[in-house]
Image (tube, rainbow, N blue to C red; front, top):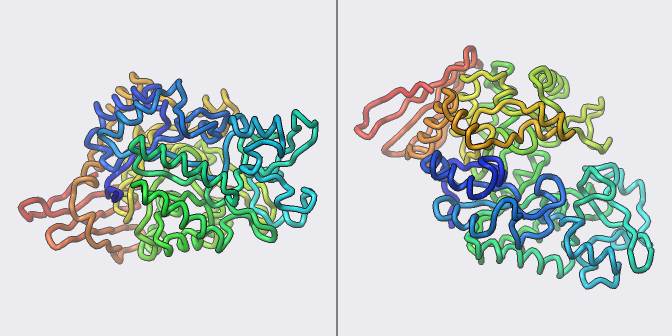
Length: 489
């Protein structure tokens, strides 16, 4: 199947109404002509942590959210994307629980990466760990095996807790590949059309490397999983937060990638009222991308923006975002911080709040996203122009909850009445329906305070114009009769 060149929604299974049935009702009632590109439902599986990203299994749906029948009901009107965390599985999964009981005697032992597969006698070496791109203080957790009382150290890339809830899979084991195959086969049976390979950059562990996007081994895995997905009628989207050169390598191999450069660059454009960096970037970036401004994590800074921005520039922008209520995700590994200690991994906050709740700036930012070549995704909070949920951060102690508000049906009704939301829906309809977006893209040569982006086919053309001095934006386009029209966003 081909990915549709139209706007997609990103949402949790319970964030728009409370469960999957409610989500389907909301989609069909309010957004049947809005998300023609589909809906990315963040992990709806049973999970022991990280809001779904520590899955116990991919063969079941969390009962609080619904059933596979509810997923299939959504697929009747919308292409559905689900996540496959190819790097890890939950500590509470039946497979790891069996390992905790029996250790190396478990039939599932080879699923997991015990440290003796990495270091002789399983003893970690500090000089090796220093080279790694760490997501926690140490890349492993210690567990006591019930039957023997023996301690086993197992690789765990992610997880705030110790021991971690997210147990890495040994992708070199045949058993792990059989598991991933079973999960993808099940997705296909449930009519899932797209699968995001979450955390795929971490699957290869190799001494002497950062253990992140290890070449050439990563391409061997990508070829294997892509061939499998293609045979099942599934399109893959690898999720890799890294230096832009790595994203370009993936694109060079023909894979879809995420444009993790765009969110920061657009934010910088409106905060500093300068379009030069954005226009320069839009002229050279690969076109086969999924674009986004906001998501369930935050606006990527390091390592995504490395070598594209200076530390001084980044500090100033981060300070503005903090003044507007944002919080930060930081990098653990000293080796991957800037030399002067700058360590911001992501800026966390609603994109509407990061733009100071300025309706014109927010809509102009969305217009840039929609005109940038690629498949636009709109996060559900951004769809409703939601503001920072500071109370939820205080309640949970989790900084990412600032942009994870759950909307009840009454709230959705209320938010949809906001002028900024109605204007956004009109803009999405234009992006979905105007045929020139399948044509040729150009970036105009404009003064620093202006942006001009155009699409053209033999029959139709449209041009986005933005004045960064006041954030006003408009689209000039040819209508069905060939007459020039102006659409003021």
